[in-house]
Amino acid sequence: MRMNRFMSLLSAGLFCISLAGCSSDGLEDLREFVKKTHAEKKPKVESLPEIKMQETFIYNTANLTDPFAAFNLMPQGLKSASGPRPDPNRRKEPLEDYPLDSLKMVGTLSRGKQAWAVIQAPDGTVHRTQVGDHLGQNSGMIHKITDEKVDLIELIQGTLGDWIEREANLTLLE
Image (cartoon, rainbow, N blue to C red):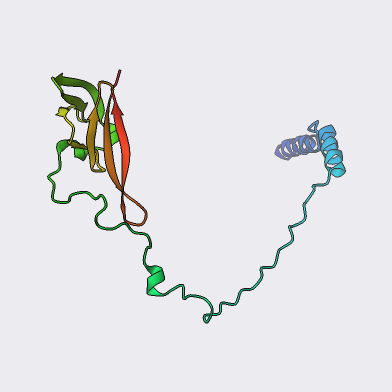
C-alpha cells in the first residue's frame, strides 16, 4: 500500500512537471517582433577622424632667446613701489573682519556737511562709519557717502603681484 501511494504521488508529480514544460508564457509574439526589429536596424558607427600630423619644430638656440633664462622667468610689467598698496602697519577696523558682500548699509546720519553711514555686520552689530574709514577684507576705504549708497575703493592684488584699485559700493537696503 505504501508503495502504491508512493507511485501515485510520483506519477502525479511527473505529470505536473510535464504540463509545466509544455506551457507557454505568452511572449512568443513579442520575442518575434523584437527579433525582426533588431534584424532590420544596424547601428551606424562613424569612422574615426583622421589624425593630423604635427610639424616638428627644431629649437635653434643660436637664433632664439633661452626661455629658461632668469630674465624670462621674472614677472614683467610690475608696478613700482610708489603705486597703491595696503598699509601693513595700520590698525584694522572692526568692519574689516567681514567680506564686503556680508555687510549691509541700513541708513545714514548727517549733521551739517558731515555724513555717516550706518553699517550692519553679519553678527548683528551696527557701526557708524564716515569717509576715510575702512571696511571689507580688501582694504576698502570709504570715499563718498550718499543717502542711497557708500562708495569705496578696494585694493586687490593682481596676478603679477601688483596692487590694483577697484571701485565698490554698498547700497541702502529697502
